[in-house]
Image: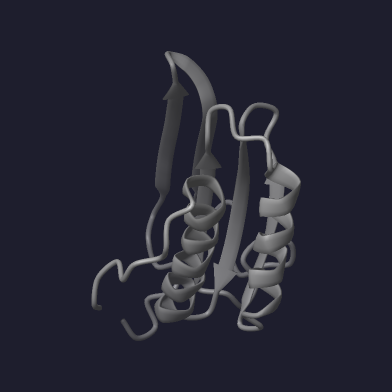
Length: 130
C-alpha cells in the first residue's frame, strides 16, 4: 500500500527447523519501529522487503559449489541486496533485501532453482503466477 512502509506496532517471528529431530536452523526476528527504525543505517535502509532462504540438505557435500552459484545469482539481480553463509550443519542461509515484492520473489525463485538443480539434480519449475 501507499505510505504503509514500516507502519505497524511490532512483528515477532520464530522459525525452527529440525532435521532428524535435531535443530538445524532457528531464526528469531523482532521488528519494533518505535525502538529501532527499520529504514535506518545498517537495518533495512531504503529497502521495503526482506526475506530469508534456508537451504538444508542432510548429507549434501557440495556446499562450496552451491554457495558460489548463489553468489552468481545474487550478482545477477542488482535490485536485490543479499548474502549467503554456510551453516554449522548441512545447510546455508541466504538473507535478502529488496525494494519490490516482485524482485524478492524472482530472486527467491532463482536461488531455489539453483539449489534444486545442485542438490536434487532436478530442473526448476514455475512456482505460481502472481
